[in-house]
Amino acid sequence: MRGWRRSSTCSGANRGEVSRPRRSCSPARSCPSRSPRRYRFNGDSLLTGSLTGRAHQFWLSLPPAGKALGLLAVLAAVGWRRSPLLARIWLGAAVLGAIGGGNFHPHYYLQLVPPLSLLAAVGVRTLWLSAPRPAIAAAAAAGAATLALTMPVAWATPTKQAETIWPADPHLVHDAVLARYVRAHTRPRQRVLAVWADADLYYLADRRPAVRYLWSRNVASIPGALQAVRRALATRRAKIVIVVQPPATLDPSGRTAALLRREYRQLAWVGGAAVYRSRNQPH
Image 1 (cartoon, rainbow, N blue to C red):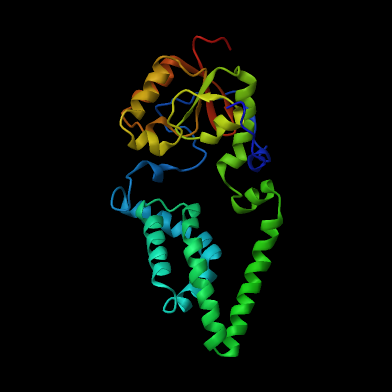
Image 2 (cartoon, rainbow, N blue to C red):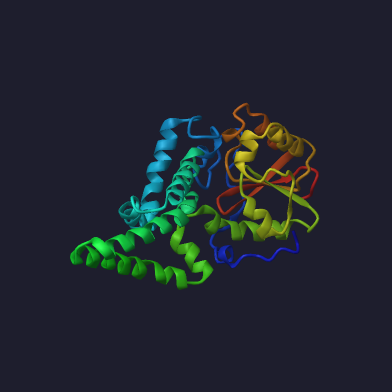
């Protein structure tokens, strides 16, 4: 990990503060979480888990998806009939891939861009050859507006792009200060553990994870993953544990919270996350 080059996209997120805990946060209780990520923890497809939760996430994803793909979708609809069959099959497969998992993160819609662009190109040609001049003018105006809105972001620095597109992303807001804290309180060969998901923290802090499951989906769906996290806590494999989401989110039995309370002690609040240190380590 030490050989990785750090991305400038996250390096600009330097807001946050470090403070000693003013009150005890029992890991058995719902400690403050930097973002509600419970939608990641149920089911593996559109047909499993909470249908209401998936519908709500789909609804929340529509505004950014509409801004990014709305014009392409309209032009693709115009060119649908004259498009090659393979292009239409490609778009259908991309739609199935985007919605089949049931997790409607905006970046999952990226797989729609190539087939939509192809069909949209056919739609532009169709309009140019057959549509009245006012329709062509309207399409050109929409294209110009799209360029005017997107090009400033495209030309911006990676840090500015991230802040513009994801202004409230908790990782961009807090992970830089968390990474600095972890680097300052651990040695390069010591391991850390983020409960349950903060994969970029390991990269930014240049520290190895205590378990190989870096995403909450892994812990929720891979047999033995939750037990591996419990073993890491029981053996104090991580010098520092960062509680990003409440332990009960993935382990409602309370066993993970009990292990954390038994083997670690809370030291500080850093960027909205509770930081714990192994009890066999000095303050």
